[in-house]
Length: 341
Image (cartoon, rainbow, N blue to C red):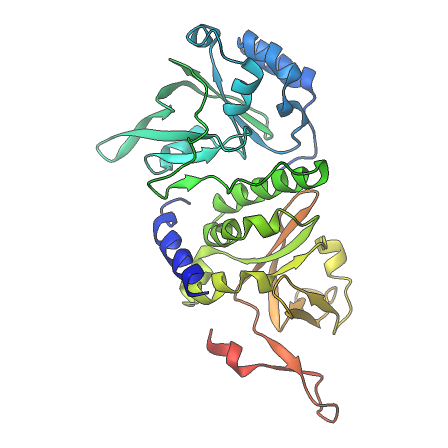
């Protein structure tokens, strides 16, 4: 436990400098048409036979020009396209804010791109992806796919490209090849983590990243998250990340429409062994009587979600509550040991 807490603290100190999903699924022919219209004819043909056509999440693609691809005549273009595609929407403006040497895992497992913004007088001008400059930033953005044109020497990524001597990585632990069902969960989990990082919830994303092997085995999940400012504002960073499992309901997707229908005193099992959440105030009573779980107001419903994961926002961590004796006037009471927040 101590080593895990120390890891969280160390990661938090490094990662604090890193700060819309639609339901439309791009078909292989649609993506091929986009690439072709933008002049990436070689990638256009490759997109018809790659796994990228089955991904139903926001993507950012760093597209090498046809002339750049000539520098790697033995490259597999379908694999190369996967190696230049990452989950999440990374605009050029956002890429310029990343720390020098940030690694981001691609759709090709265990392979990471390295982002190196070039700075001049404390302002970032150019951005390089594995040493290749983005020469055409944001040339396509439909809210589901962002595409940047890159030009330079191209080669396949190394299988050790995600190994990090620095800790500015957005990679994930390697896991054995999953079944189709769990593969979908892992893609969706990475999608949620990427969007939490860019929405002011980077500490929650870090805590979830450490628990990634456990989370990746779930079919669905409901997560109650605090934003970075709230965590540091009330000084509970260590306690919150250490008990993040107490804020996750496994194998249950409770979207706002279903969550607010839960009756008072409904219990929700969490990932923490023996941990339970209790609906202390039912939803649907209007803004003056907001829904509360473990006496904490649910601040933002459906903050981030996809087909298997939903994140709801909190202003403070859940305290632990326990049953009172049968002759007590209230069914639940707050465990005072949990109120050190």
